[in-house]
Image (cartoon, rainbow, N blue to C red; front, top):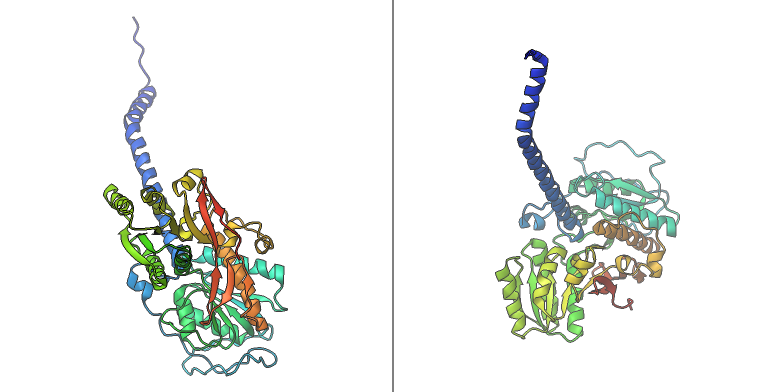
Length: 438
């Protein structure tokens, strides 16, 4: 039999294929490991985004590294340049000139076109952490301006970064440019810097709660926020007025949720109720079993969950038939019917924008594509009501009640706007508004 010589090129191809087949399983394993790493990184990024959103939404500073960072005072704000008129003609709301600052760096003078009476909106649009939330507030603010008009004044947006000092500088710049009302900033450190700067010469609506100000803000400072502790206090009031007196509280150990728990307990006990048991949430079966034992003891007549959506789903089955209250943290939007059944019977408060789409105030404004991100949806509604409050400040009618999309808005004696929220409950796998707001 004749034996043909195999070409060297064919031997090379076969050898290469054999080697490829040999390394293929290892290559596939490496790809799988890489995909797992990428997925884990994506999950970490989402969790970080949630923490950063909470930092704005619930009144923290932009620093999240420790609880000390949450409560640290803002750096001292800069002083002002020489007095500059605030626009053509006197403004009866401005009672004193801008104080001078000899060490201020030189800034280019404003042009005549820049010195125009306007509504100033100061938001951290240049912040990597808060840009999306700031954009949602801006879009809601501008949507309301298109619907209701701006009392003849244009809206001018001032983009801030993360530096509180920069917020004060932009605020001063807005005053020099003719702002008749200012709205913002959004982060707690920035609003604290402005509140401490003594530069509020026009009505100013702060979009977060400033630090270290237990009393009323200054004459021209007003506060409007989505602070979650205020929700917890409203929940405590509802529970007490419905006849509940002995509460079991389940809370996560994060700084935010500890504050939520404390806000509920302070109001509930202040009204005459009692916290008879407090449990730190843990997903461990032993910890959940201890919650069930406390419920089975029969001493409590109500439960409060200082938990977010994911943890509340885990804790709910161990609370039996006990009436359960929570904050809007348990409302994650359209999370599916199964999640709704997991939270069956849990009552909470949230804004009409998310619970009452057929409410007249809600129907007046266009919706944006935030349905997949409920927090951005909240910020968009927040921007709508911020504009409506700004109009009342311009018109000198800040004390008037507003039927807002974030709640029924009333001005408290401390110049903070209070949001009367809508009650809702998880029933038959879905969220149902319990009753129209009074």
